[in-house]
Length: 115
Length: 112
Image 1: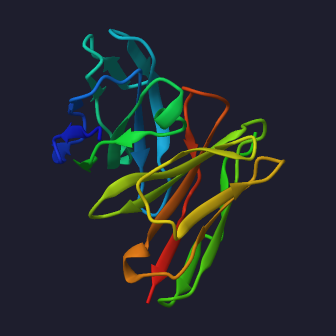
Image 2 (image 1 turned 180 degrees about the vertical axis):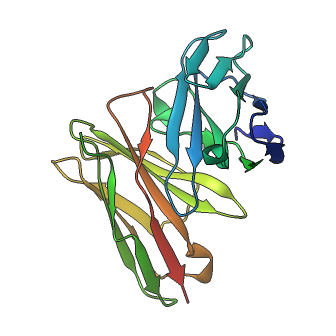
C-alpha cells in the first residue's frame, strides 16, 4: 500500500529560527495536506494543496506540492513557542474506489521550540 | 460554524466488551472518515461513509464497524475489545470528494 516518508522525525530549534520538513511517497497523490496536532487533540488542518507545483502560504507557513506529485514540503518561518507540536503530512488519491475519504499519513515531525 | 464533535472524549473498557463512539460532522458535510491513531502505527484509515453508505474500508478486522445516519452523524463500533485496540479514535468530515478533511478532538479508548 501507499506509504509516506516524513522527515525529520523530530526537530529542536530556537525561537525565531526557520523550520523545514518534507514528505516523500512511492505513489502519486492528487492532494497533499499538512496538519498540526497538539497532545490529546485532533489534527488541525494548516494547508491544503491540489495542484502539482502549487505553492501556498498561510501566515508564517508555506507548503509546496512537488512537481512529480510524490512529495511535498512545509516551511515555518520565524518560529514561536506555540509552534510546538506534531506536524503530519497526508496524501489523498483521486476520489473513487479505494481512495474515497482515505488519507495516508506520514509518521509525523515532532517540533520543539526553545524560547 | 461548529467543528467536528466526538463523544465521549475518554472511555475505559475491559477486554471482550464492545464500545460505540459517536461523531457529528461539520454542518453540511456529508462525508465522514474514521481513523485510529496509536504510537506504533500512527494514523490509520478505518472507513468512510457518505450518504449513509460505506464507500471505503481500511485494513482492519470485522470487529470494527460503523454506520452513518440520515443527518450525517456517524458511529463506529468495536466488538470483542482487545488490549491492542487502545488508541485515539478520530473522525474527520469533508464536504465532498477530494476536499479537505477536518478532524474532531478524538475519543481516547483504553482497554484494560
